[in-house]
Image (cartoon, rainbow, N blue to C red; front, side, top):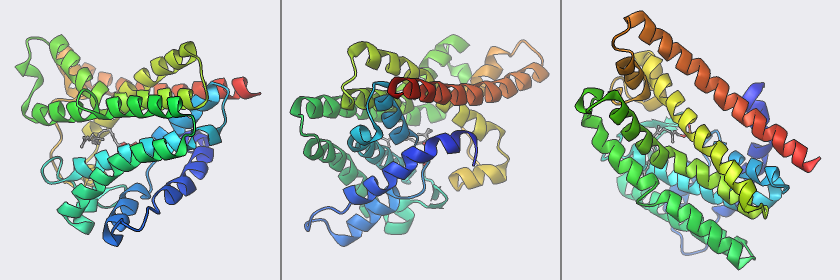
Length: 302
Ligand code: GRG
């Protein structure tokens, strides 16, 4: 194990049992629903968001254990969004985290309900496991706003509408870039920002500390999304199939397309170089960002 996987391991070790325990639920939860929720949530994800919550808490002088409750809540929101995103009415994906998607395994109705239940369970988990009521309310508010109509859900709505868009539909590549960044900030970035905020709040961080973490999370979210676009763009059809369960269907409104448009007066070679640079730059930025947060966290607690 090396690099990011090694850095993430202690956070993964902490979050896995917490996710397991948080999804035992009470007697009223039907067994099949519980199975579907656990199938989606406990599947082998990278746990980037919980790690960011816990690292943010550490950067504010807290410990991993201070941030486990919000880390679970954020992963629940993320898992719900993946279940719903994979549905036939949205991205229509058959594979997620290397397994059949939740609707393939349990049917659409149960998958929809599992997603619905995870949203409510995230809020309930924050509420019932945070004795400091002011802190609970603040974390619930931040998470709900990030997941809501002007955040994750709004970004998803605009992203679905953008499926029929091309860069050329916009007045300029800059107008296209602003719209694309706005979609990704809401669909992907706002949840990363909520991770930073919740970790900071859970550790009792100051406003200035939380603001600094938000700056990092904002850049990280954009770098993450650009990397995701680039991986789709440069993947072979076979690799794309493994990523999504589909053998075709790359989007036309993506960062690599945008960069190609921005370089349209240059030669094809130059736009290929730009894509290669974007791959390297975003991977390096992600890695450097995580390293920086980790070193910062270590400095704060040593
Ligand atoms: C349905 C409201 C609603 C929103 C869906 C999460 C999302 C919004 C869409 C997922 C589609 C997608 C591939 C987006 C790119 C970025 C992203 C969120 C990737 C998945 O996150 P990872 O890579 O996944 O952290 P794991 O499985 O490792 O947790």
